Length: 120
Image 1 (cartoon, rainbow, N blue to C red):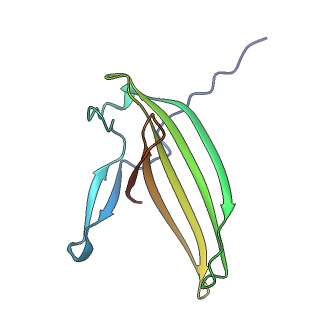
Image 2 (cartoon, rainbow, N blue to C red):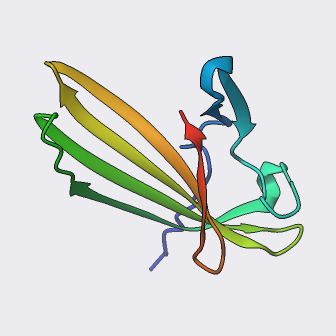
């Protein structure tokens, strides 16, 4: 019996995210790079696993709001550092208009959230 090999990749993620700079606009930041060594060679950033989930959020101003969370566990082939890219896709209905906002976080191999990186 042949085994099927599933290849995980970073193709689902955009190349850049945008961090707001207050009144000065937004700053594009490369998403597909190692936070430790700065490696941007896609072939050396290996997706080890991918997790998807969702949850409901309550906010009295919004009619409906749900959050879909996608996490990509990545290992850098150059410096052997492991990290996670977490994308929180927030779906909301505000004043009859549907909105989707994606927040991107980098999680270290110790499980510490390095903070909100930006949106896409």
